[in-house]
Length: 259
Ligand SMILES: Nc1ncnc2c1ncn2[C@@H]1O[C@H](COP(=O)(O)OP(=O)(O)O)[C@@H](O)[C@H]1O
Ligand SMILES: [Mg+2]
Image (cartoon, rainbow, N blue to C red):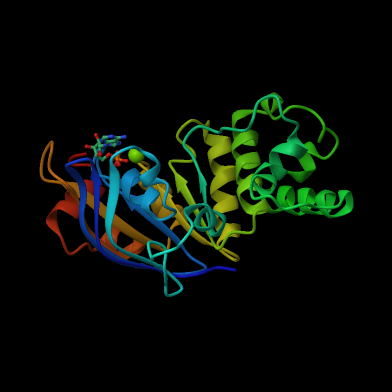
C-alpha cells in the first residue's frame, strides 16, 4: 500500500561531515518523485535515510524526522530491518544474487525477513512479482536458471521484482538506469509509470529527460562547494521545475548550464 513520506529538518552526517543539511519535504503516495542535482550534492545519501540504509556505514548518523504515514522511522524502538520491508530499494547496478535461480532471487527478500511460504504461495508470489516487474513473459520458462544469465535490463527488473515481492509501501531507486542501454532504460521507465499505481516511488536520476518523463514532482539539490553540505533548493511539480523554476540555480541546472 502506497504511503506518504514527510521529512522534517533532516541533517545527515558521515562522522563530523554534514553531507546533507536542513531538508524538509513531503513525498506523495501513488506518485513518482525525482531527485536531481550535481554529483556529490547528497542525493544518494538523502535517499538512503528514507529506509535507514544510511546508518549501516560506521559513524554515519541522521538528525530530524522521517514520517511514513505519520510514523517516525527514527522513533525509539523502531527496527531498521522492519523499516526496510516497508521501504524497498533498487540500486544503480543490478545486483541479483548471481548463483541463485531467478525464482529464488525473487523470493530472497521475503526469505530474509523470515517468512515461510508454501510451495504454492511461493509460486504465486514469484509470478505476481515478476508480472509486476514486466519480466514474467521473458523468464517464465527458465525460473530455475541463474539470475546472472539475464541481460542487464532484465536483471534490473529482477531486482525490482525482488523489491516488490516483499510488498513494500515505498520503492527507492538510485539511478536505476545508469548502467543500462536506451531500450532497457525505456522498459524501466514504463515500469516506473506502472509502479506508481501501487507504490510511492522515489528516483534519483542524473538524466534530466528521464526526470521530466517519469516524475510528477522533482526536487533539485545543490552544494555551495566541495566540503559544504548538500541542500534542497527547490521542490515542485516536475513541469514547474523544468519550465518555470523559482530559483536561478534550478534554472541553470535544468537548462544544462552547470552540473
Ligand atoms: N560512505 C561515505 N563516507 C563519507 N562520505 C561520503 C560517503 N558517501 C558519500 N559521501 C560524501 O557525501 C557527499 C554526498 O554524496 P552522495 O550522496 O553520494 O551524492 P550524490 O548521490 O548526489 O552524487 C559527498 O561529499 C560524498 O563524498
Ligand atoms: Mg548518488
